[in-house]
Each structure stands twice: as structure tokens, then as C-alpha cells.
Figure (cartoon, rainbow, N blue to C red):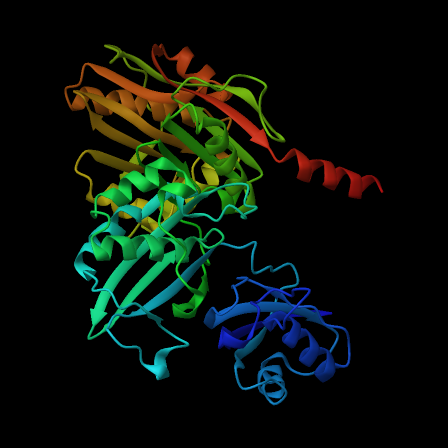
Length: 499
């Protein structure tokens, strides 16, 4: 069994849409019929975007499973021989069996064309919406700018939508005019039912002067379908492309009038951990925002999601659907005066980070923190940051001719802060961690600092105990952390294990 991916283009005029319907011919039904005949087995395709009747596509995506021995890249040409002229396969290839076009992160791009003139043109009747009233494209472009970003698009969603969550992110929304044709091009991470056509219908009201451009923001904030304009006809709409996002954005920060959060995803691939810092969120949006972001982390591969809620509404045992957050511990700022008398640093010697030692530093850092709770994973961008930031100092720690660990210092608020220290697993238990702290004290004294500080998680008991033994005391609680796992997935895995 193998899974084949198709890039499908079609003229949607003569079809009742992508999805099979009790009445009318759909693109999906035609593909199923022609593939089944070609491969001599029952085929059922899964589409990435279920376009409406009359909507066109240049690059929709479909997948299907098959036992055929025909090479994946040859299916494209063979299938095109059987398809009607208004459906054409642009390419075919094999993808992993678990790959699903609606369960991966994608960027979808649509275009809507408007023919703005007094008399229609027959040659464009299928591919552009004829609109005879004069339109101000500049006002439409200004209004469109209010929709860019992550928002709740309830106002632009059909009442027939079955979506659990109405939050989407629009990456770009451009309005351009060439002669008598106005093109609205929109790119986002996903769209609600009829969302693009309702946005276009609302922009048309702005273009005619019925709404001022700034009214678009009020419509968005209303979160009420009745506030927006009518749904534009289907013939002007084309699905241009669906692009899979192959990598996760390391750090996601989103802020609008309803929520403000930071989502750290760079630890998902190496460790299966995601970190959500919720800075603010309205009461009406709180539960669904936490649930939406938790689900997003799990869908992206996180086994555990760690939450710091600066609004103070999460608590131990707080449930969000099938996710239960448990208290993990606090993140504390610890400090102490620079000791007058310092112990010897033994044989430990610091080697200042350079570009030549950057690769070694990455390896030492990541191996030192691999099994550490809330330990980070570094990439080349972190090396560049350390080298370029004048307030940072980073060292490889060497003893007996071998590299045993690393240490990072930060000049902050008139004192020296320990940004990080780690000892490689094979060198632990030899006192190097304590020696690294003495080296830190020595560095602070040489730079004429009177106080040192560091940040430590309560649940990192080994580090906490070491810092307490060296006289560090709690100065400030920076955040309380809670953690959850995908209980549904864990239950399923346990069931399969015991079956």
C-alpha cells in the first residue's frame, strides 16, 4: 500500500464543488471514478480544500491509497488521458502513508477577480465577477489591512460552518487593479466556510463607499456574521496554491486586542516539549485560546505542553477539554552578593566562544541540557546572538585538556547574571558544576560587580540544591508553570500496547 499525492487544477463552473453531493457532479466524484478505472481498484481521494460550486483551482491537493505498481510520477499523465478537459492533474508523487492534506500546517492562497466596468465581457464570465458600480481599489486595500494577522473571523464565517474554532491567521491580503480588473489575493493558514467570499463581499461595500475603510475593523471585532457584507459569487474565486510548511516557526508571538501570547516550539522536535506564555487574554476568549494553542502544540508533535499563565487563571487540575494542566513549579530569580572569599576554581579554565569554536559549543550545550528539565536546544542562530550581543559572554569550560561544559554570562541591571551553565554527562559528579559557579563569582569580582543572579526552575532539583548550597536566595518569582499531555493519545497508546 502506498499513498499518492495529486496537485489538481480545474474549472469549477460545471461542478457542484469539490465534495461529493447527492445531486450534481463533483470534482471528487470524477477523480474517484477515473482513478478506480485506471488502477482497477476502488479509490477514494481526500481533498485538502473542499471548494464550492463554481470555484476554480490551480493547485488543490488530493491524496489516495493504492496497491498499484504504476510509478507515482507516471499516474499524473495516465490519469489526464481519462479526465475531462476541465480537470487536469499537474503532478503526482508518493508521500508517507500517515500524511494527510488537512492535518498538516499549510499556507493557502486564493485569488478573487472582479471585472469592474459598465458592460460585461463574455470571455471572463466564468473567471471574474462582473461588477458595474465604480470601485475604489485604494479604499479596499486600506480596509483589507485590518484583517491581516491572527483574529477570530466569526464575522466572515457562514452560519452553516461546523468549525470548532473560528480563529485563523491571514498572512497577507492585497488588493490590486490592472485596467478594469481588480484582483484580491489572500494568503493564510486556513479559511472558514465561505470566509474568502464574505471578505470579498464586504470589501465590495467599502469599494462603493457604503462602508469607510476603518469600518472593517469594527466588523472584525463584532464577531457577528450579520455585521459583514454579503457573500460574493463563486465564479471570481480561484484556489491558487496549497503549500506545506515543512518546519515549525521556532518562536510564535501573536498580539491583538483580545490576546497576547508567546509560543516556543523549537523544543518540539528535539525533546517533544512546547512552552506557552500567556501574557493577556480576555475572559470570553480564555478557555478556547488555551485549548486552541494546546491542540496546536500537540498537532505539531509536542508530547508535553508547558504553560505560564500571567493572567493567573490556571490552577492545578484545570481542565481544557481532554487536557488537564498540573502544577509543575515556579521559575525563580535567585541572587546573592559576590562573595568576598572565593574557593579556588580547581583545574577548570574558561575558553571564550569564537566562531571557530561555535560548532563545538553547540554540541556541548545541547548534550549538557539533553536530559535537563526545561533545558533548551541551541542552533546556529543562538551562536550568532551570543557573538554579536555586547552584553553576553559565553565560554567553553576545559579541564585536563578536555572540554567538560559551558557557561554563559549576561551583564544586566548593574550585576552579572548566569544565563546558563552545563556539564557534559560523562564529567558529572567530579565537582565541575560547583567550580563553574566559583569561576562565575571570580568573573563578577574582576568586572567590579557586587551582586550576581540567575534564573532556576524549582523542579530542577539538582541545580536548585547546588545554588542554595552556594548562598543563592529567592529574589522574585518570575512565573508559575503548569504542564499537560495529550490524554487521548496516551490512552490510545496504552490500549494498543495492552491489546
